[in-house]
Image (tube, rainbow, N blue to C red; front, top):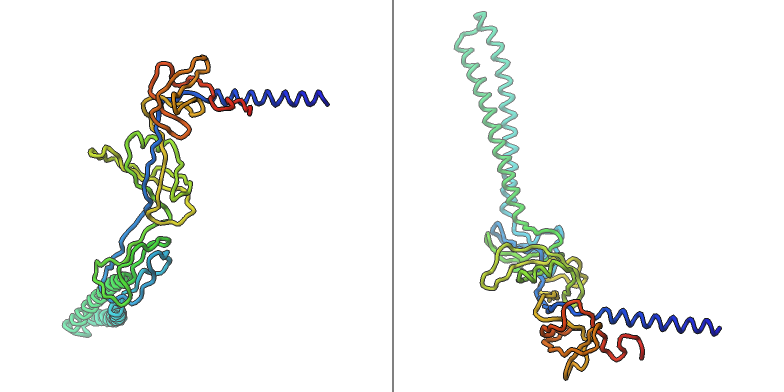
Length: 343
């Protein structure tokens, strides 16, 4: 029993010592850096203003601001006149179809009469003038068929044009988009070209930013950010090839991969990027008396090294360069327990 207890205590002491050694070894001098917070606001992936293509009175409005678009049109513009034109066109098509059938019947009858008289004129049974008259009537009937068929085709094209105009009385937007702004209401008269609603695809959010080349490199190397207080991931969506010579920045767009909050524009976005800076970075745990005469101790030396703190960066401080310290140098833990795990 005593032997087992001794082994347990020894194991704890060894583990604690190893933990302290690991913590101490993790305190290293790093090259200078500064944490930069880039901020922006969300916007939809695509947005558009839907305008009226025809004039008329709005008889029905199907959506209001914030509504998600389904298979219904945005509005219904009074289709009375276009419907009447379609009815008139349908009647004209039917009349032309009858005229074509009549012309074909007449041409068929004249063709039979022509063949009968052709035999008789060769035998001297009818005069040549009578035969020529029948031949001319037959040719005219054939031309009449072509004329009516052409008229029928023109009416069919006209019908397609009217159907397209009828569709424009029911302007639409892609399913799943949302209405961001409404400009009209039921009973209002609109002219062709008048804006009806602003719509956008808020299912996918973009974050436009203007960044330096160094900040862009840092953004490419990570994917973590915060949107409206929620941790999110992102990916680089677009990078403008243009360069603003005044600000010396590049315009980019980040796309949010997954966000469970309310999908809308104007949500605050933050991404922290680490930028190289002058000086050296020292872990806070490696500094003693930092408020009076801050010092650190190298792991391979017993003498303390006085440092000049430039600023704080979370668990790090940035110090002025010194010949006594270089990136990669190991430092001793200066916290009360010394990293050994002892009370």
